[in-house]
Image (cartoon, rainbow, N blue to C red; front, side, top):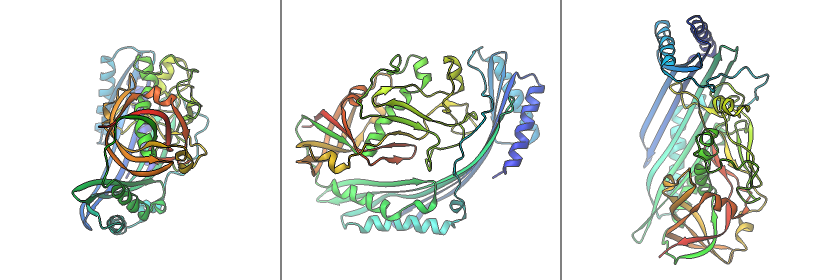
Length: 449
């Protein structure tokens, strides 16, 4: 990886050259990353992949138009060429008063994003960790017979952004993660289960938890039954609840609202869910996988309350949408790499936990469904909020998990779902950048046989 000083020198040169060639405003975004992927099956390493990448993205603004170009080649001649390309591209784009760059912020959040242990632990140790996770999962129960995936991955990255307003920011980060997916078999029935953890600190990965979680989830679904169609309380486990956040995230983008493609348009300060629901995007969350001191444009990240006790409070903005609406960016200008311009995206996006334990949340349910898996969530309509998905889980009887259930479907609209949540547990769990606690819906039609 290039060091920060080299990035700073290149970025400053880009801005100077771009301004000399006629840019009204210009921005240099430099990023480098180093990634490791290990996959093990039956204790044998099947994949060991290390990849490094670095590059430069240049945005140039002139006469209200914006041009962009990028390169992985940081030699001076190539940099000169992409500055010219960005200038030429700006001449082809349309004039837009949202085409502006952010000015330097007086303060950025101080975050601990880099654990040197992720880099210093030998690859052999990481391979053994992956094998250990697989061993724990396979030894949990003799019915666990197949490993579909056992893996470890980590990433270390460095970002520098400099713009012609004098904005000049950099940070270094790293994260690691491990996962296991296994298949349990009994009497011709096959069921899968998974466990995964992504952490900022290497020492926080827990092989035993990951292995046991995957095996337990697979085994408990063996012998799943079908049920009749009925209207009952439905409980979503944290993983399933985060799947529903995937419908909400694009609808809470200011870009979707400005284009008339959000089901939340025109509803600020109105009730859009039950008072049990508070939805937050927090780019400053301590140990959050998606935390960073600033977004892909150099705007400080923030804790943005989007829905508070059921009331819609606002939307996620980058600099462009904020300029269009005459508001301040929320620091959600996201870039997946140096190859793209900032889009609006979530950071650490989660439902605030409640105070009930999961046992307390279940205890009043005479009959209901605890959903642990949904299939086809990608077919949900983020504009209307309508969804219809296959589901599997565990039947609840007299407040206890009774037996596994499969072959059911649930359908509805995300706003109706939010309005009918009547309890939220305290077990907030993150899956990457999205998190949710166990959530209970008062009544919902479960379509069975």
